[in-house]
Image (tube, helix red, strand yellow):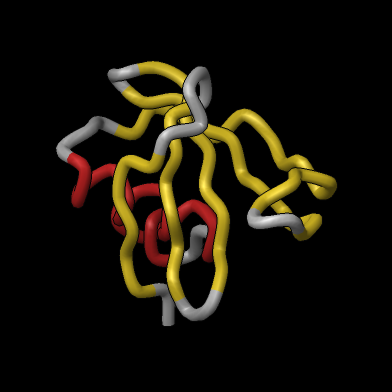
Length: 81
């Protein structure tokens, strides 16, 4: 399992980090939306499931932000180097 985690894509690493910081349990990624509107811009949003339901992640200005999928309210933001 550890070897698989070390090789996983950046977006999954960020989703797991967001979940840890938000006190949620990551379940799985569901897909990407390349035309998501965020702050008036079209961006790539990664969707995923946690123990609290559907969420999505957007990267912007060196950070990754986690939003609740149903309400679009921010949950947590982390630095994304």
